[in-house]
Image (cartoon, rainbow, N blue to C red; front, side, top):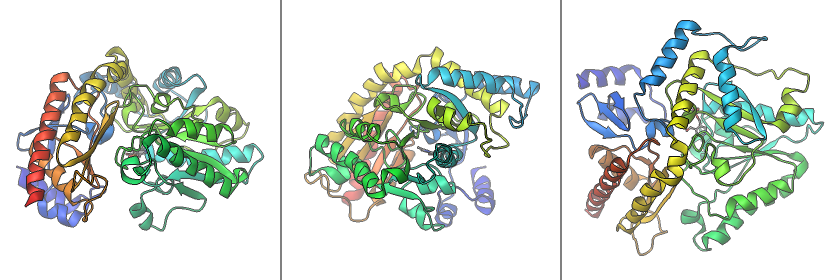
Length: 451
Ligand code: PLP
């Protein structure tokens, strides 16, 4: 029974990113099954998973093919490490596959178990790379305010979530943050095109201030996900590319959300014509069926660091875990066979976007935006004055998110915006249900907020 499960959960289970005092009073929702884009809870309700779990279930839930591949692998070799001159077939096959999918200049991967670990790995890789290049002063890594790169010490530090920094006295030294390219919230006094260039030049200013000889890398998500689906103006990435091309600084494209088809390309940086030196990956790599992450490494970094003739003292017990690699291979096989990346670009992506953007006409919405299959709705108190935020930031978003759940759909609230990132297998009919449910949710939220 749900109540008994909730009580046990409240007694012993500390959930990530949760105020446990109020959560325990309300009781958690207990999800028991999932199939395709649909979740089922312990009361038998069906809920549309508008977030693909945590932006990760690209191929939808319940794909037996992945479970079978993991079962088979576990019966053959359930675990062995990849330290000390050993390897195994699933890690070999997955590495080859990833190298084929990545841009031409990226041919190698270092494995871990999550996006956070991937970014911890990045942190040490870029600094060690510059040591090897005889430039040990190049230590500073530039991230962006409101970026999210995970919850480990390096991940939290590289990210720009101020609330996270406050807990634990972060960031660690040698990390610098620049403003995000958030036109709707911070740049609307300029045109989006002007603001894109303006926001990108924050990077140039920061590098010039710190000194090019001290800056090791710039890390960014192609589209900031957890920060609120911040889709940069079209002028942003070309200007960043110019700035990086003119300077000797590594570019790290955090592909944990934007990779594996989310933006209609295998990697989000390809969508924006960027050429990363390093790409942290996770989530969509296995569609979340088993935990796995990695850092994809360009030939430049491989030659300078990996093949330097000295050991990189870094690794995880589960680096390249055979069962996780088998899950990743089966997942990538489904993505390829069903043409899901192309589908996002030319079919379901444009189909959903057309309908999603129309929600921008709703009296509660200041802006609706979407690229690929990731989108946001900005809730505003006064549509005539759309860039003015709610006084009590976050309340309207939370109300709307909870109403959405009650209406049978998961959307995520970030401040006062509502986010979706559905599985890439979403059908046209399901997209229609998604948009209708969002519309109903907005109507009901509008009524609640008017009271
Ligand atoms: N990087 C990005 C862009 C993310 O969105 C996330 C998680 O949401 C991470 C890194 C951290 O990944 P994980 O939760 O697997 O550690």
